[in-house]
Image 1 (cartoon, rainbow, N blue to C red):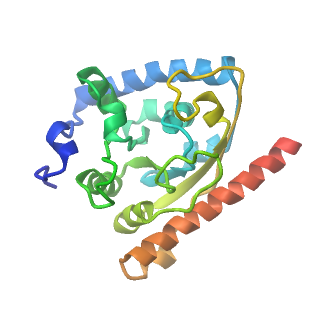
Image 2 (tube, rainbow, N blue to C red):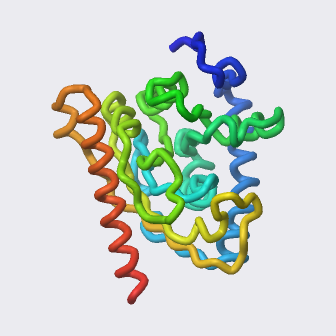
Length: 249
């Protein structure tokens, strides 16, 4: 895959070489970040995770698909559910897809984001921008990518319709998806705020894998990608109901 493109992101961001030193540094940065997240989630806030065992038993590659409410959903969730397996095997540390303008503002942030396995997307460049194609390649190569099917943050916390981007990534890589629904993270980091809050209640539930064999038999076109995204959002909605039932017990 070539890096030659007119995309502004690629002009400023070079795909890191994931050699041994990079992988060691990636684990160190992830571990240090996870300590901070663990304190914030379990000591400064009240958090409960359901279904972490699914992550421990499922093999890569797959898309980890969750609803999207803050700029740091993936950090709050992934540092908890992927840390144990990821420290043992680098490929189980998921890739993330942050927006370039929000997270690559200086050399230090750029370095940090690279080491925690981020692939920066550029808003408005569409589902065929270089970074999106790189996501597909990471999945084909056996990786895990945390993707938000809604494509943007929900300002209200309500689930939004799925967009075709995640569907295209799944169709082209022929991988499964593991759905995730969370509540309360937006109370820790509301839209427009940069400092996390304390004393909040967070609940996260992870579901069984979704397979898309029936969709892979269809034509590779936007309508098919949309159906895949809708299937994922349907399961995320089901997880929301399941979470509420668990919390009543």
